[in-house]
Length: 372
Image (cartoon, rainbow, N blue to C red):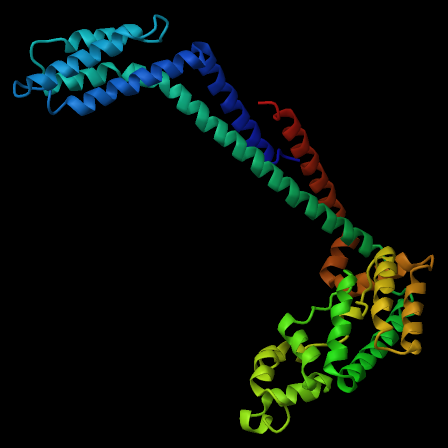
């Protein structure tokens, strides 16, 4: 396998950072920083005084400039790199009269100093590039690990027996789903909105049950108004009435409109979906936990026959062949004909091997280039 792009980019960034570090270390970072500070201050003086210190029109600016340059040069530490360059430029500027060409020459003479202190900028750029390369490598590693998981799933499902008796799982699950759906529809249409919404609100105690809790204003309304004793379908019917018609059925039409009419979509969508079992089903341990949580909620609106069907679904998780049958169900449901052919031809196994090699190479690179 050729070297992954993420590894090649990280290695190159690490080399650039190491080279930039060595070039700074050859001079010394503190010495370079002192030199850069002096260089910037010198360039600033040239920029600030070029218009006023040239010619013969502003003697005060002229003397200020020469004095500032002399002070800057005199204050330089003896070990500042390129100190002799600063001194030579200072000497050239200590004339009786300065022109634009003197300032241009000073900038030109300072260019070697600029080139030297640019090593600090190069180091910072190399550091940022190295950090970005490590970040990109980690992101690529995450992508590769996700691909590995997908390919491993294809291999597992590709080995599944498509003729396995998955109906032994599907039958009990469908029977329960139909029963709990019918029980909830009856509960929703016959019991008061107050009872139904309070039951759903209590389901919040079970995180594995994904009922959306009733909006606070709606729950408060059905608890404190007589209309809350009506079933949800009747409450929705009221919400569609005009204010004048509604006035014959409820005492406070504005309160009903405010609390119910704006939540019609929530009420209309209430069903047993959060306590039904998906197909293909989840892994055995997950299904065992969810069905226990479901039972705590289902007993609040369904009879014992429905609860018995739910227990029958939970019993499926204790079958020795549950995982095998589940894989077969997943294969039937999720594998396309093309994916089955790729598994059979060995293409998926080859892709998996390549992905694992790339993952290992990136992990090694992150470890190798992790100490810069």
